Image 1 (cartoon, rainbow, N blue to C red):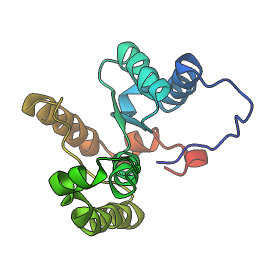
Image 2: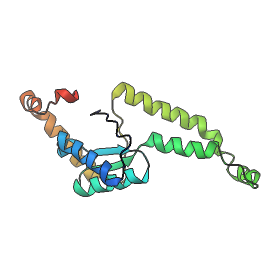
Image 3: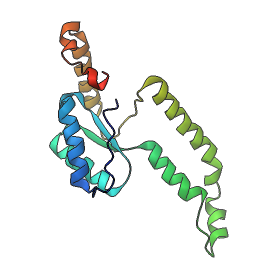
Length: 159
């Protein structure tokens, strides 16, 4: 779900600044409605995720998979020139060959997000019990009458 876009150009975006933005957004839509916060891979974003996880123990912070793949592919497909490049390519030359496969995966993830609005990904930090508890919570919520669920509507956020 998209909440807002704000231009913070010129602001010093340390972990506290980012964490406070995330925490304010989480509070706005209610912590029980948030399961995961996804950021890019910058150190300040990861640190902000940890601050959010410390404040809301049921919310997980995760780096964006597409950003991770993009960074990895940049490094793999455009290795720096250095004297032992041929030796490295001899050992690791297979890596650029999987680029099209990874590109297809990224396109598939983008397609799913565009068409479905969500993508379920297994987080290895979550146990089966955590997943079951979450599914139970969602099922219990959707068993409620429409009047109850209507109280949760936030039309200004398009949900």
